[in-house]
Length: 167
Image (cartoon, rainbow, N blue to C red; front, top):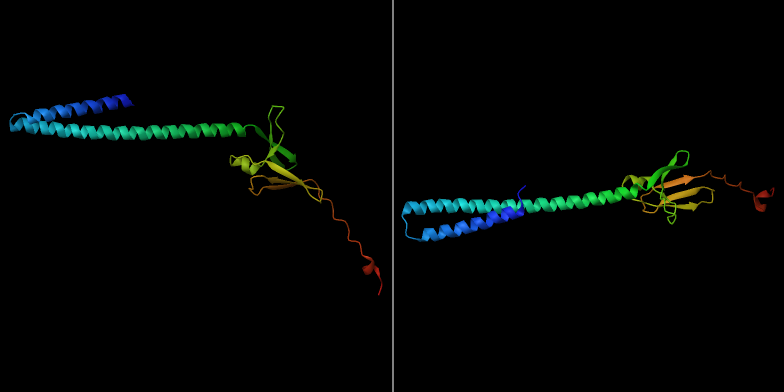
């Protein structure tokens, strides 16, 4: 790969040679020499343009490389966060991700499997229902809902005193 110093040096050298050829063209020389100088100048201008295009292309490639390195670093950080969880079976057939942090100050919590698969961490919030079941809902609003526990049967409807009368 050509370094920016090399490209810059070639560019500056080409500018100096162009300046010298202009001075030589202005002096009293015959038409053949002037024609040859004109061709050399044209070639030098062309090379100068090519050097500028290469410099711009190199700058774009460097910018793209830096963007990709940042993206890779972000993906590594995200992967490190996701590695702190393992699949856990709350009850037979119902799976979520549980935190496996070794730090005593961190709280044990569960993460939505739908969000985990998409690379985000949606904490599951629980709610006790009147039926005796527990509802696990994703905090990110992805729509994940999990009901655990056995639902208690509804109590029988007792007839009121009005219904108990015999007409």
